[in-house]
Length: 526
Ligand code: G4P
Image (cartoon, rainbow, N blue to C red; front, side, top):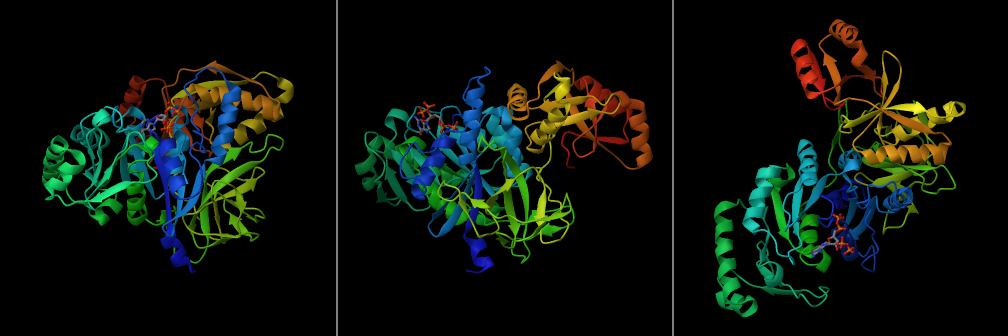
């Protein structure tokens, strides 16, 4: 099969949701359909459960699990589907943002009883920033939930998505009868007491009132036909190009745990969702069909095997074909590297591959060569965009608690930052190290890992910083002047870029007013 055919087969996407909406359950059901797993319960949630206590074993265990479920590839209807998992815990939001740089579309899961939740809003914002096409799955219809029209309104208002339902729930909770498939004109009946392995699908046109009544009763028929009329009146029908541009989102209803409504979603997904898309690099846009291979690292995972300090770098193939045992140019370190055991994540087990195509994710064993955002090519210099750092929400000074282990500490911190666990800033004035994170949990993870993997120990000192802003000016003289005046509040990030550390919202406002010729950004890419 040629490169173009391989590209057309591939669909690479992420499932995102607020924790507990049903992402893990849905992933598992999709894998069941794809034959990638045989039994329910095989995919463990990678979320770090609600414990905020220092349960390090739990964190370690969860991290171990999440390697196995980071990427799940399977074949379905002659397509190659790659699902990229994203951590549910909000302290790992950055990881999720970076993973979204490696997908071409997303499925957003919403709990029908809870509606749009905080984390969903944030994640969808990023998808929209990247113009990633989104399909919405409204889950848990077997529970009493919000009115379906109200839910769609909420999705439009809170998530800013223009929606169009492709299936529709008949009843809810106790009276949930099934879903009506608007584009195939059939009903899939829900059996609350049985397994949903054999679906009871009845072809039915909207004018066949008697047939509806026979299967779902008088009351539900009346309600459904009324709803269908309203749907036709207020929602645009799905236009594929509009969806692919990220301007309209098809909506499906179902119950993941009951395996209900999931097949409709998957069938539609493999038809509609985009094939591997071009990626922007600073130098130019790279198209998947190009013959020459290119790819970028969007995630690094350490400790696959606790006995070896090995890491795995996740590479998204952007263009051309990646071959095993072939020299590729690692842009940042200006070296050629070849990989003797690149792995794929087919059927939830890792296996060595000889070649991979655009859209595929390949795992590269790494002894410290890779950083998030690195690119590999056949020689061309390419810096892929879309993997920015965001301003952390919490900041602490790092203090070496064991002076004899300074080297170990430095090495440990650099490697953990390369993995994207947190961000390191060094103050310009005093050269003190500051670690910035999204949540508290990372500080515990860092402390624990430094001790167990590097034999170093740190303590943290609180620091009153509101946000880190990357700064940009028209010319160097303006930048130099600003740095001179605000030197105390300036630090350097991992790439040597200047950031302004603002103490509060109020200082931010004042500084911005006083320096109209300086631009302040909450992310490192602008
Ligand atoms: P997440 O990955 O988005 O965090 O959610 P996850 O799939 O772990 O699901 C969260 C909880 O919601 C799980 O229950 C799961 O069984 C349940 N769930 C998922 N889909 C449905 C559905 O369609 N209907 C209903 N009623 N529940 C659903 P749990 O009690 O937290 O875990 P478990 O003991 O069932 O595994």
